[in-house]
Length: 161
Ligand SMILES: Cc1cc2nc3c(=O)[nH]c(=O)nc-3n(C[C@H](O)[C@H](O)[C@H](O)COP(=O)(O)O)c2cc1C
Image (tube, rainbow, N blue to C red; front, side, top):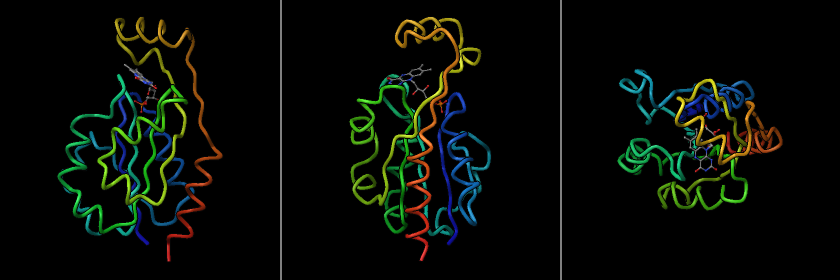
């Protein structure tokens, strides 16, 4: 079963999660929605598509959401899993429901929150100051939910027949 992990990441955490999933999954490729590889991407050749998105100001990337909506009919023919990355554990479920187009959300066999990272050196001064205030953190943080990644990769094995 050919698997695509298509993620949209601003600061690299959703990308890192995608790469960890790819290492644990046979015949998987990772594509960054913001890369040039998107030009040649043909979703129809994949059996399973894992959609990964990070949350900024309560939302996933507008362009990524538009892409998901415009490719909805192809995505609904595939086995779909979805993960998001955000720092607010309590809101993760709400973000997933609000930000992932409804039909794709309903169709997905897996939805999960894989944690978050704050890499202050990658942020500009204004964003760094804002996020330090909101998060009450002043050092880089990384919390990867390896248990949720494992449940995703286990489910993938079940769905690979
Ligand atoms: C500018 C900015 C805005 C953010 N807004 C939110 C938010 O509204 N809710 C939340 O739970 N996390 C928020 N976060 C935390 C990110 O979701 C978290 O850092 C995530 O790991 C980012 O993924 P990425 O590295 O793939 O971009 C924000 C982070 C940044 C830098």
